[in-house]
Image 1 (tube, helix red, strand yellow):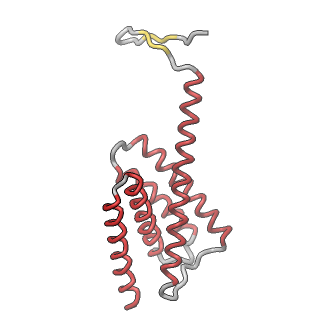
Image 2 (image 1 turned 180 degrees about the vertical axis):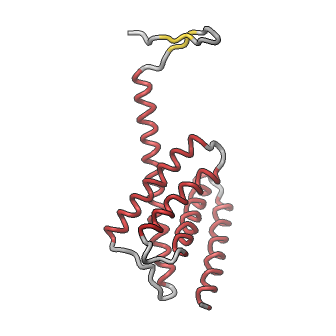
Image 3 (image 1 turned 90 degrees about the horizontal axis):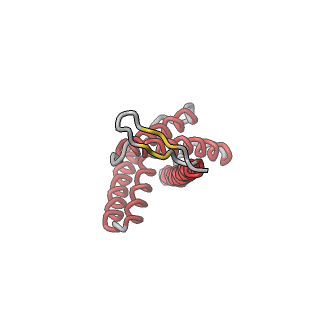
Length: 171
C-alpha cells in the first residue's frame, strides 16, 4: 500500500506523509536518546555525590546522606528529570550549551535540595553541581580528543577544591 499524499494549500506541491514505520523508528530513536541522557546523568550525578562525600570526609565532616537505597532512589529520580531536561532542551536550544546544561542541572539540584531539606544547608547542592560540571566537562573534552583542555578543566577544578578546602579549614 502506498503512502497517502498531502497537498500544500499555499504552494500546491504534493508531499508524501511519512510511513508508520519511519515514525516508529523516530520514536524509538528518541527514546534511546533519552535513555542515553538518563544514563549519563545518573553516572555523573552518582559520581558527583560519592566524590563530594569523600571530600567532606577529608575534613572529618559528614554529608549526611541517607542509606544506599534511598540515595539511589533520589539519584535515579533526579537523573531521570535531568536526563529528560537534557533530552527536551536538546531539541529547543540548538547550540546553546548554557541553557542545555544549566536548566536541567538546576532541576536536579532542586530535587536533591527538597529530598535533603532537613539535613543540608544548601552548600551541598553547589558542591554536587561543581563536581558534576567538572565530570561532564572533562568527559566531553576527552571524548572530543581535547586532552589539554581536559587537563585544564581538572587543574581549575583542583584549584577550586583547594580554595574551598582552605576556607573550610578556617571555619
